[in-house]
Amino acid sequence: MAITKEQKVDFNENLKEFKSYLDDLKKEVSLYKSQMKKFPGVEPYYNIALAINSIKYINTCLLINELSIAKMDIKNDNYLNLGRKEIYGAIAFVEKSVGSDVDGSLSENKDMLAKLEELTALQRLNLVKGIKQSIDLMIEAYGPNSKWKWSWPEIHFKLAVMAKNIFDWRTFEEARDLSHPDYYIRQELYNLVIEFCNFAAQEYRSKYDLSTNDTGDLKKSIMLLELNRKIFQITGNTDDLEKTKTLIESLKAKVEQIEGDKEKDKKKKK
Image 1 (cartoon, rainbow, N blue to C red):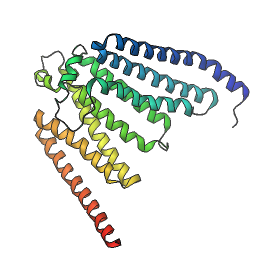
Image 2 (image 1 turned 90 degrees about the horizontal axis):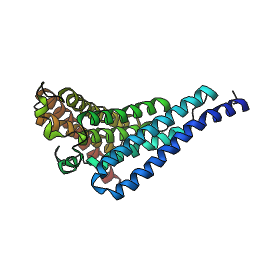
Image 3 (image 1 turned 180 degrees about the vertical axis):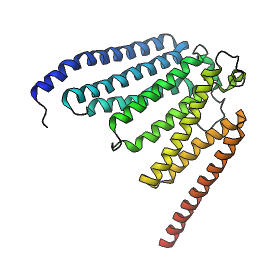
Image 4 (image 1 turned 60 degrees about the horizontal axis):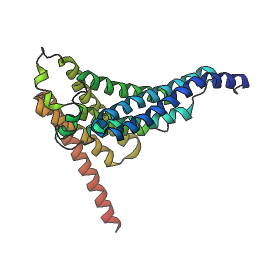
């Protein structure tokens, strides 16, 4: 059904307040970046503030899409795309403060985390959950048949690595005591890291099976499982460690076989 002039006018009238808020968020970004230049010693905290700003931006774009559906019965792809791109921005800001390494040791970024000591365990958990919720809502808004469907594994990969890097693994052992004030908070973030890695690893396997047939996707899955393997190793989770090792070995064997078969085919064609 065609959109009437009245529907468009109603939508645009309601949109004004949201656009004004987005403009305010952009001004905040400029302010934070200006302050970072003046006070480089607290730059990591400003990057976290910028990530929170991005979450607000994403969620506002999602609200505009809901407004568009309510007023005109159509998705607003322009604002959905702005929000989707901002997800990468939110994660990138956190990465500037905690790193983006996936292959190194769990304490490889200890020097970076030392500059974020004032960021509490609860604040870290809430930041990770805030970004995850925005991602979930964005995927839901686009729907299951979106052209961006196979870009979600990359976003979930980045989320898993970001969550791993914001977690201070050096303090994990001391917080395993039930009497520790941060026990439940750190345990929840720990569980989220494991969950994110497993979920993204499965998404990459699905992407390989249903879309690309590219072993690069299986290798990404292996990287995430290797990350969980390291975590289980240092935390003494032997049951999950053995299960993860078995899955890694199975995937590695699959990759070797696929790449071996491709190499044989190339030689036959020469």
